[in-house]
Amino acid sequence: MPPDSTGHDWWHVYRVWKNALKIAKYEKSADKYIVQLGALLHDIADYKFNGGDELAGGRIAAECLKRASASEETISRVCHIVDNVSYRGARVKNEMKSIEGKIVQDADRLDALGAIGIARAFAYGGMKGKLIYEPKIRPVYHKSFNEYKSSQGTTINHFYEKLFLLHGRMNTKIGKELAEERDEYMRGYLKQFLKEWKVSP
Ligand code: ADP
Ligand code: NI
Image (tube, rainbow, N blue to C red; front, side, top):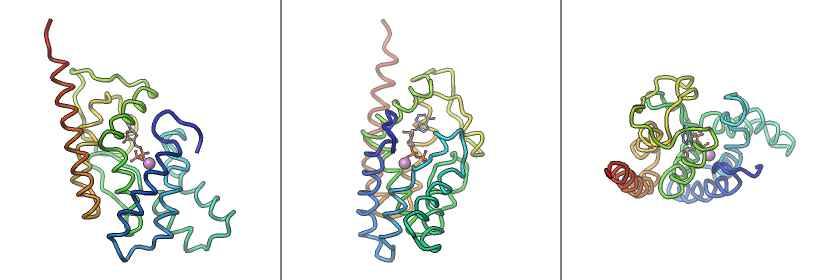
């Protein structure tokens, strides 16, 4: 992973890897080899940093695995994870099919929540030139990935458009439990943010 100031650096991958292993402990049927490869490769070529190319992740992950002589079956199971891990908009269906993928997706989503999630949202929003907040711009529940990708919304809106929805969409029981705590922390943060915003001179 290249050095990256938007929360998509190696430490993001490391946290997702560790959280995925933690969740996998509770999901006994999951193949931990696939879970770990999926976690380690999930952001290897994120569409957000590849001109919106949704297929870049799976393609580059497959190349890495081929170079390491992985089997065709491993490549296909890991690429399914990399291709489907990303959030695609509030009204867009989650296509993750395997338990290994559901675990990696939960682990990735945990890192979008809580204190770390707040830091990542503002760092990413700043890099993309997004405003912190503009009360006149309302949140949008995107109906397609294209709409979501081209959104011009603010970083505060991102909390409503994605972050506050995640705890209700976790795939695993333990993932949901871990997400609830982080969700509550973020809601407290947003409440304080809006309270400070509304103070008149
Ligand atoms: P995903 O692939 O589901 O988007 P990532 O692990 O690549 O997950 O990182 C997503 C994180 O990037 C978000 O949780 C948030 O912190 C940041 N991010 C993505 N889109 C936005 C946005 N429009 N505004 C602010 N932050 C964003
Ligand atoms: Ni990620």
